[in-house]
Image (cartoon, rainbow, N blue to C red; front, side):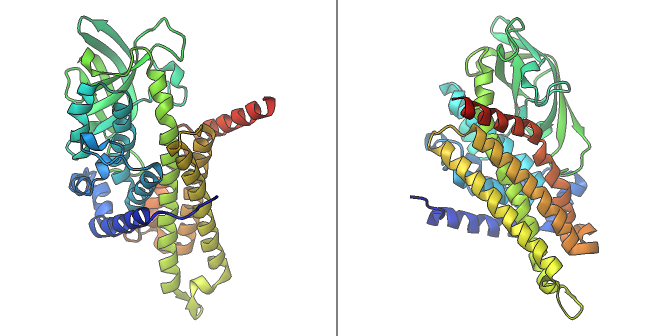
Amino acid sequence: MLDFSLTAEQEELRRTLRSFFEREAPIEVIAAHDREERFPSDIYAKMAELGLCGVAIPEEYGGSEADQISICIIVEEVTRAGASLGYAYIPTATFCAKGVTKFGTEEQKAALLPEIAAGRMRMAMGLSEPEAGSDLAHLSTRAHREGDDFVVRGQKIFTTGADTADYIFTFVRTDPEASAHHGLSVLLIPREAEGVTVRPLPKLAGQGTHTCEVFLDDVRVSADNLVGTLNEGIRIIFSLLDAERIFVGAQGCGIGQGTLDLASKYSVEREQFGKPIIEHQAVGHMLADMAIDVEMARLLTWRAAWKMEQGLPCSMDASMAKVAGSEAGTRCALKGMQVLGGYSYMVEYGMERFYRETKLHEIAGGTNQIQRNIIAGHLQRQRTK
């Protein structure tokens, strides 16, 4: 039996978050954070009070461990409120926290997870490098063992939130002799460790949370900071990437819903030629297309999340959700700009922010071209079974 309804708890979650962000993070507040490049620590603390920072963390460590569709709803609402909030929240709450939960030692979980759940600790993802984005097999940041420590040398890029994070969840090569997809490990590198240099990078959107390059110059890290098994970091990458891609799909839905809400409100208030512009077919059709895009992408995203929740194979579904959500967000932002016309360029209306924020989702988590390669590979294997 198919059931497309949310539970009463999930419906209440969406209502609560919508009300919270419209109160605490309206358009003008997010615009001010981005304009001043000011990290939204005040809003983040209030998000933690709501329990949002512990949604991937078991109750025994201070979290709530929400179901995957509920996390999609949270990610969507956070993104609808503003990219700088998403960039501050999503890497820690949905990727790094899950990585520590699934692969960390008991000591790591006991020390780190309650701090993350309480909003007192954040982590940044140290994955991409200047010469290795989608090509994860060729990560070159090296870590070699010296006694009870690892010594790390290399460079990471697009490490969002690194300058305000406590740790960088860093993928490193620990066995240079291993084949390309092997010999990788994950180290928790303290941002303030000697030899760590973080440089914010000017960027298009979400400026309240900096995206950074990180230089690791013979950084000494205790072997106790190894997450998972030595030289098996690729397992961590692949186990977390499906979830990341599903949540990127949810981010795209958040952009789509945000632009649809703004455009719909504007279209019933704005009059031209004697009637609200929503009554002009050209505008009405754009709004209809936006609504279709959001609902299609959301259903694909929720299906992938449901399959992950059930423990079913979902890599192709995750890639589909990522492509559908990110591209729906972009199409909606483009149409939203057209509906608002000249006002779409005005910061106070919020549409221009969505227009700047949306493109990243077609790139982050593996470009949409890579996702289409993954989908095509699954289709080929299905045909040859």
